[in-house]
Length: 201
Image (cartoon, rainbow, N blue to C red; front, side, top):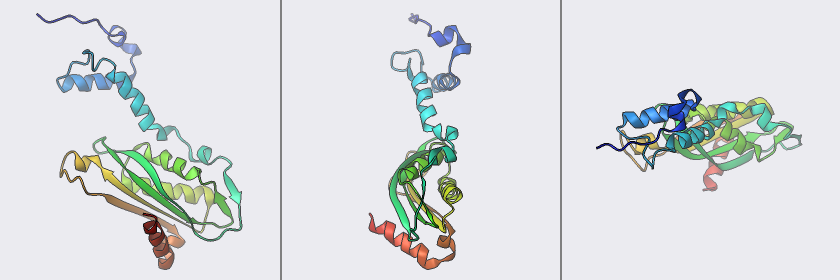
């Protein structure tokens, strides 16, 4: 005889349920699971909370993140912030990809507070993304707010959509780059940046 279980508040008042939690409950059902069993009863709510954090970049604004952290400076040599950790979600399979971002820029009378670079990375990584697009968006945001002589961004990532499914190649990684201004037009400047980020490994 099938055991009866108590209905959850969301089942009693479905209109009050978080939509992401509702979708998650439907997913569990479609996989053949029982979303009411002990181990899964709170999973839809947890998933909703996790997704709102993982996709929080949609609610971030570049200007608000930068705020008042742009400073006048006589610096005109390359500035590099390397090994910025990031975690993102592939828009094709909704599986994570993660790795490092390396940022370089050549100031033109203004510099940006160093803590702002990881935050700018978060703005674009905490979304459904393509690695190539994310890399370009980071570069364009820095170019827009700082207006330096050039910006270079390189990302390196491992993609779970390749590691867990499909070709299942666990040792592969993907590199993407975006070069603007002097980094695009001056080969020596571009090579210097690439050499410096390799030295940091």
